[in-house]
Each structure stands twice: as structure tokens, then as C-alpha cells.
Image 1 (cartoon, rainbow, N blue to C red):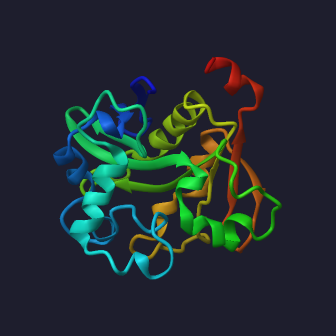
Image 2 (image 1 turned 135 degrees about the horizontal axis):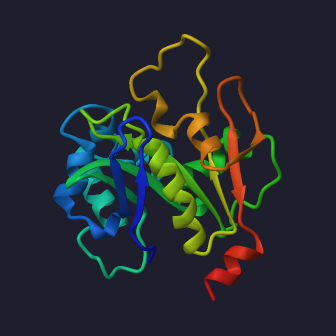
Length: 219
């Protein structure tokens, strides 16, 4: 399991502490997703449940699924499905990051695979697919810190590469509610990702390759 990672946001000069999600309690995880709105309704289950299976789940079932996937409250767990950001003692952000194969909905995504020849079953390629910042803590660099932390988390977990599928809005265009859950292009670029595909006018495939270095550090 990756060690705790500390980042500092430039806008507030406040330390952002980021830990694997299994190291937090279920109550802390729930605080990040809130009690209403898009993040609460989804519970980061969209990519996990393709087709009609997502709509078939109640919110409570999605909460239970997220708790099981993260293994929250089990610090000794060997795997988890994401990262949690803290400002002080307050849990304020979430990033879903694990092997790309963990997200069945991606398999049929034209954004992810439409313009590339990729092995959909390659477990060495990880993906950071979802960012949530808790209400009241936005515009403090939380997603940027999480994107950077995701790089080291994936590398230390044995990934050969890490991808993201962000959105870039036109100048002056405001996002629709919940639209930026995939992250903005800029937070991936700042974390060292490179654009490898531009499948739609607003969507990108960003990637960082670790290669042989990732294998060596995990021996």
C-alpha cells in the first residue's frame, strides 16, 4: 500500500494530506460525497456499472458498493480503489484511481478506445476517472493535489502507465453541474501527463508512462 502523500496548494498555502481510501473511515468517505447532489447520487459507481445496471442500484446500494471497493476502515487492506484528500482533519476530496480494467464502462467508451489500438484487458494500465471535491472546499487546489498523488499511487502499485480522460471547456464557458468529475485537462498536464488522443472537441486522453522504472521500484 502506498504511503501517505502530502501536497501543498499554491492558492492557499495549506497542506493537503492525501491517503489511500482504505485508511479512512466510512464516515469520512461519506463526508466527501455529501448528502445530496451528483456526487452523492453517483457514489463513483458510473464507470463500475455499465448499461442499465447503474440505474438499477439505489443510492444506498451505491454507497455500500463504494465502501466495499475502497475497503474504507481497513488500514491493512492490500488494495483500494482511490485516494482521499484532507485539509487539516477534514476529508475534502476523492480521486478514483486503479487498474483501467476495474471500470467496465470504459471498455465500450469511444473516448477511451475509439481512436487508439489498446489492449482493453491490460491490467498494467491504470486510470484516474473521477474527482470529487467536498462542498465548501472547492477552488483550493484539491483536484490538482489528487492528480499528482494519483501518479505516485499508481506507480507504487505497479502500474506501467496511468491515464485520465479530462474535459476542457471553451474560454468563458461554465461547466454544467457535475460535468468536471473527470477532471480538467490542466490538472493532468500539471501532474506530468501528456495528451495522446483528442477524441472530441472537449475531451482528451492524457497519459503518463512509467515503463521499466515502475517494475524496478516494486521488486
